[in-house]
Length: 294
Image (cartoon, one colour):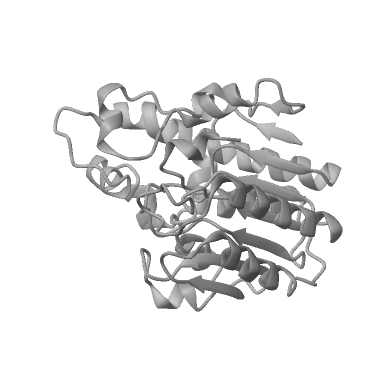
């Protein structure tokens, strides 16, 4: 397996890191854990350019994403007077733009080689071209799709699959592709928690809403049943592999073990491999120390 990583994926925030449960330096820790594994690391060369971001965002969002107050709100941290927008851009938004490049690089490589690529960062599934929220400012899947179409890696009629197994419903992806019939979504999520927007939940082609407290056995059974519905010849699959489904996670509400999550990834990737669908996996959410285990 090829892993996409860059040291600058990590958010070096100093004392400000305590303002949010997300471990901004977890990517370096995962790479350290993978030290002896038989993997190849691929490095994105630079953050996705602002021009590309602006091609994706609507006119209003191009302005809103430059607001310190609104960006901090999307990051779910208080508005800190002494912190400048320049600091936020350097320490948080630039790593996020680099993560977008990682997802795009993974998609390009997957399409060219047919292999599975794993971007340790990315999976910003609450963002869209019209909104930013839930610690997601740029929708890496949406921007990657836009660029793949522009470069000719994907045609107008190519079908794309998004499998989202983060504990939270991927409302940003659902909104972004609400009018695109060639993009199909399979979403396994906790229906009791954020985000609760019904219109984006209704956009999901293969919905798997689950209740809080679900354990691994039921989760994996429902996931497998949903995957068996995937029969269309997709040109590419994106997987948002959030680890906030773990029982120790304070935000996800599920009760999976690390072993359950490992089985989840194996089930998904084995199914996609059987169908010969090129795949790029993205990080998604994960707010516990167990989320760092490869």
